[in-house]
Length: 275
Figure 1 (cartoon, rainbow, N blue to C red):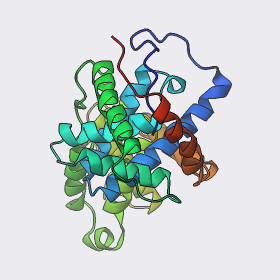
Figure 2: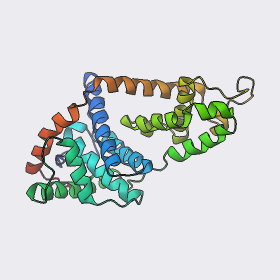
Figure 3: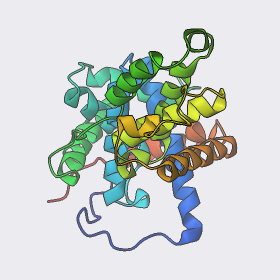
């Protein structure tokens, strides 16, 4: 983890990276979210807390440029904030230890010493920075998880029981939703629409259909959300496919290799939110 650069403006970031640079930024955020999700699993945080952490991360970088801050520090801080927002207690010490271990797999575990206290101070200061950047409202207005559960329960009563029992529709849709947080779909898509698109995608994968949907006046997805259109569902699925294509181009070791440099730099630049 590396401390944030407090010299950059939080409220007036007008310059955008050139188009040729955007894929690099997307790959960076993809790797950081991978790291965050691995940390959440090792910390035994539930899916809602993990999604909240990723949403906080994406919200922060929708307002700030990645080159001005260390994304891995922001990611760890987002996890810490999410545990508070979702009221799932987790010690900051555990978060720091797990995140450090993920980024330094070949080094000995982090001990209580100068490095630990520097990282802790950076995280605490970064928490204030993130909260202020998000307008003192880090909690996401809504998450798609509850909609996904509700919609799947409804579909269970519509789809043939043998098909439902033999096809991992629920797990696949849930996996698509979890993976969607590798990009910022959660900021650009209504939670209801994202949940429906994940279910639709899973049904397409396994060639599952809702009986009589082709002759129904209202398709099943509009029963769940009146304002959604098929073209929007297909657009969301297209973004998910692009995200999976990006995954094949991201080297698994890239997170560790990049973080070894940034974590060392954090000792020389402890985060202090600018006034």
